[in-house]
Length: 111
Length: 199
Image 1 (spheres, rainbow over the protein chains, first blue to last red):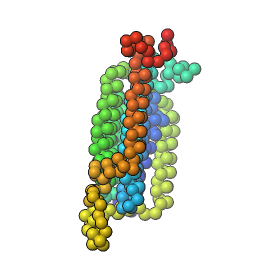
Image 2: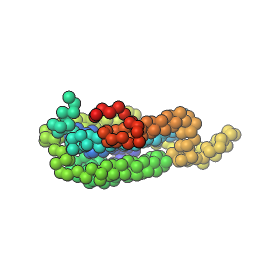
Image 3: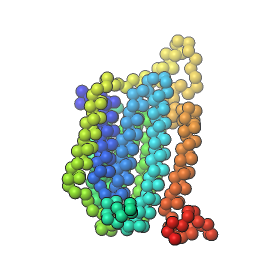
Image 4: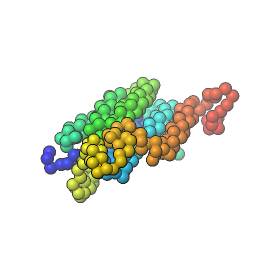
């Protein structure tokens, strides 16, 4: 445990959370779970920003505070994205009676 | 926050995240995601982002989770509506892809110089400045990451971004109304929100 610094540990955890989200998006067909995986990826990116912001906190440039403000902005974007994404999911469910994005009925919507 | 504590919290977050993406029942996945989000809030608390940790609990753990659970309960999906699972080979490839991503990040981290956290207590900074005869501005003793310190930047340097976020939220609210209403019904008396694409 002593050979890894705290900033690096934070970045590793953030990257692992992002990787879990990538795995979810690639390996699932349920649109609900895919949206949740996207949320996990956003959380990983937020955590990375908070970690870097903490590293800059001793500098008087205001860069660290900028990082934290960016995280708040990304949270607001995530909330808007989930609202729109879930309403798209409801619209899709009305059309094909399933939340599976890989059913023949869902893929037929592309044509 | 020590590296051990970060990795401990991180293990909770990553395991809860893995449960989230592997559960078949969406409610189980949502509850596992709640654990992961709470773990991230704990990590933020340890990284001097007190205001953001509160926002993480309120926005993610509150608003976004409620939206997810609301939609899951609204649809009450039966097993055949949940959809099939991808093939084993596709899952293995997905796992490989995400592991490769993780190794790229780890490689990038090993290349950078030793990063460390320096953070003198604000009282020490103020006392040192006063000893030098420097005038200390109001609010200089507010902790980094505290609500006061955060708001000082949010409403001065980043005021435009803050206002633009309100426009984004308004746009998404309008988008949700257009997307989620029944397309073949008049939702407001005598007015149509969109051209009747289904008529």
